[in-house]
Image (cartoon, rainbow, N blue to C red):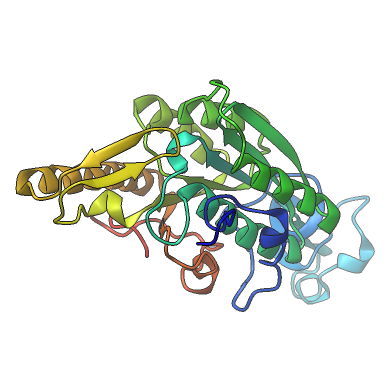
Length: 315
């Protein structure tokens, strides 16, 4: 890394803008029925004039005569009309964890930067599919809300704020993941698609309950950010690690220490996977040295993808 080169340490708006129009972006079709009243390309639970046939019923005064089902009418001798599932759009929200614990990485990039890159990749795919995109940044100094919007200019502004959060100075106002989830719960609309990108370091009972409440109103995807060092401690002495503020020297020659180190990460991962499996929440693992676009290209993240039995994460 060259002097003053912050690639992988801090994200930039220009970098996040380049994630548009990537190969394999796929579509953003939801697995839950959308309940918003905004027009768009997704099925809702509201009946109206649309593209998808729902059922046929007896004609009632005021029904559109263009929807009369002439075959059923001829067969029954009574006038019937067709009902359709009206197409609606759904907003896409992101909860992006940019707190101090995310500013760590030994390969590729910091978790905070990887979260920003993954957000950009997913957000551009959603926007290009016609969705409104917005979210909540959980930063080192509290939260910042960006209301869902459809225009490219507004998405550029959203990603600029995400990039800025990767370099924000810590003034001591950080909140918990539970706080972020509860804040998101208050602002999302029913039927939304929600991506939660975090390392889930402080995912506990309170956050679990908040996640459960969210899952009853929205279609959720959890993206667990991690660095290879978190799951495997090298067999080496005097290994120094830092979160940008504190430096810790780790002695990896101790076999029991390496086992305890790996077990700590495994417990966090398995706990989250179990919660998501029980709530039918899609869950994905993204390492700091992985390609963020693989979330779309290989994992079909826009489709409902609950964890397999046993709580295994999808890679």
